Amino acid sequence: MLNYITPINEDKSYSDLEIKEIKPIMKLIIRGKTKDFITAIGKNLNMILPIETNTSTSGKTLTALWLSPDEWMLISNEIISVDTNAYDVENNLINNVSKVNLGAVTDVSDQFVMINIKGSKVFDLFATGSPFDFNDFKNKKGSVVQTILSHIDVIIHLTEINEVNLLVRRSFSEHLYSWINDSASRL
Image (cartoon, rainbow, N blue to C red; front, top):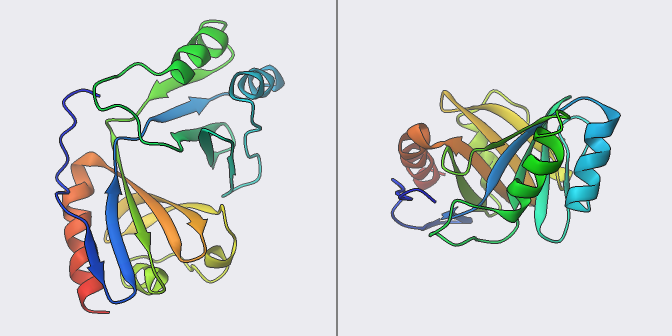
């Protein structure tokens, strides 16, 4: 990581809500369209990318979030060393996907902050700041949505019932975390 500094300084707990940043986590964006791209990704990751909209797949070490028909975000399932910017997964994908012109691999680890929110009021919190209807989403483990929360673009991944990982661009994370805490304190 390059001087990993986060504006989120503490975990928070409220009635039926726990909020904390998960750091540092490797995050890669991969893009490609061809069957050869999908095959190369499968061989290198030992997992199949989700092809159904707004879903995810998880392997032992990685989770893949569907973002668009030709774009996925790969997230490490474990916290990584704060002292490194080199990841074996990224190097393998660059060598076996990017360098052979099958697709693109971009490290966005420092660009996105991941906030874990769990508790029975998660979707009550989201309802106060998002136009998205979470009624179906909240019952489908592994669901992914890109939406707006308090006027900020976010990616929300349902990891368990009543538990989500929320990804937000670092430049908006302090404002969003402040809004989350203020809104959670009022539920």
